[in-house]
Image (tube, rainbow, N blue to C red):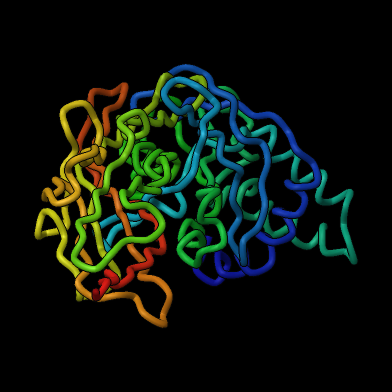
Length: 347
C-alpha cells in the first residue's frame, strides 16, 4: 500500500473496524512468542485508542503462583528514564477472524461507513497490497499480530505508539519489530503487576514523641519478603517471572531539624527479613539501629510528615533461559509525627 493509502487506512479504517471488533468478539488461534510453535488462543477482541487499532492482550499474570493477592501498592522505578512498556504487539487475529470482522462491519454499516471502511481494508488485506484474500490459504500457519495496550497504562499517550496495522507472522517466528512481545517485555509488564506491601512503620514512642528523644522505627519481617509475578502468553509455554526483593528502608523525617539513624536514613534489611529493631523497655536513651531524633517541636504546624520508602531490587527469568535485572523500584507511605517539647518542672 502506498504511503497515502496507508494514511487513509489509519484515518478511516481503524476506528470503524475497531468498533466492529469490539461489538463482535471472536476466537482466534496463534503460535506466538519467541520460539513458540504450539497453537495458542488469540485475543479475538479489539478496540480503539485514538486512531490505533489494538487487541485486548491475552497475557495472564499470577502472583507467587496464586491468582489472588493482598495488593496494597505498585512500584515506582528509581530510574526516572524507564517505565514498563505502555504497549506491544502480540498474536491477535486469525485470517478467518479478520475476514469475519470485516463481514460484520459491512452488516453493521452505520451511515454507510461500514462498507466504505471495509473497502479500504479490502485493499490492504484482500487485494494483494500487501496481503491477498486475508491469508485464508494460511489459516493455522500463523497469525496477524496487532498492538495491545498495557492495561495499567492504556490512557497514557505512549500506549498509542503501537499504531501499525495488523501484520502477518508465521508460526514459530518472531517478527522484526522492536515492540513485539518477547520474554523481556513480559518481564517488564510483570514489573507493573508486582503487588508490594504497604510501608506503615512501627514506631516507639507512637503517635507523639519528644524533642531530643530517639524514636525507634521497625517493620514486620512477615510483610517484607520476596514477591514474584509471572506473565505468560497462554498456549505457547512462553513466560517470564519478575521477582522483587526488599533491600532497604529510607526514612525522611519531614524536616531538616532531625537526626536519622543511620545518618543516611537508609535502614538495611535484617537477615530474617525484618527492618530495624522493636523498642524494648530500658532502651529509651539508646541509639536505635533504625530511627530518628527530632531536634525541634512540630509546634503550631501540628505534625511532621515522616516518609518511609522501601527499595526493592528487581530481577527476572524466563522459560527461554533469558534473564536479567530491571531498575530498582520504590514504594512508600507518609505518617504524621507530632513532636512536643519536654516539659520541665521548677520547684
